[in-house]
Length: 385
Figure: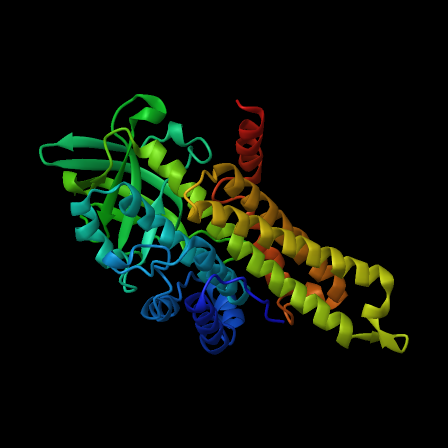
């Protein structure tokens, strides 16, 4: 059942109509087969991103001056939710691409923005965000990938892990160590995909989100001109954390869309499925379970929209972004689990998408900062530590 969106203007309404049309024509008919096929061999549905890009849906929250859609964050996130309801891998990829543009759009010089953003926001490019490493996930400050200054350039060496779009991206927003000063020794770079020395590992064999291609990105003496360093040397940690606040809202919105699809599937099945001469939905125990699923989805949506409105108003939203990510991804895990239960044995088969929703939900509690990290962020804000 389509959810009524709280769009701030007519343009927002038109965007939701557009993304629903693309979802109905291009995504929903393909998602099950594509995800199943990609399970045995990583496959990025680049043509879907091309379609979204041509429709202007890959650059919604960024300035129109450089090719963005100049839309409020709450509009952008509701678009992400709609994509997540149709194809979670694509929603995650769209959120990741937006995340890769954030450092240049927010911390880049006017010259860097003019040089880089038109391509990034054109709809024809796809970015990758290279932050995590094999031994540096939540602990960003322990990263070991290095960027050594060499004349007018930096030489990057090291390995990044769990990188969406690895091997498919057109540019890699990368964080590397420029000094040994812990978290204050990290800097940010935009690395072109054709840079010599850049290579990729074997795609990860994941539980779900098979069309979100993820692998290692290996920097073997990759030379990057100094004008592709974003911000000052040592500013990388601040840039990364600021970007992650926005990125967490993208994952929250996508997770809400996933949960909404699981709820719709379960409710429809409960009404259509008859036992003892009546719909199973008429049993109070099951009806209450679905009511709890609806409450979880509605709470997730309210959480990310509240954070988005703070963002749009220029107010601090780091705590609220962590709350939204925590609430929405926990809701996705709960609702998809309950959807399998509502469908019973059918929910455990691949004849219905409930089992796929269940597998896709799990990782949302892990990436863009685990939910344990979100609780740490929230508690520090509340307790003033």
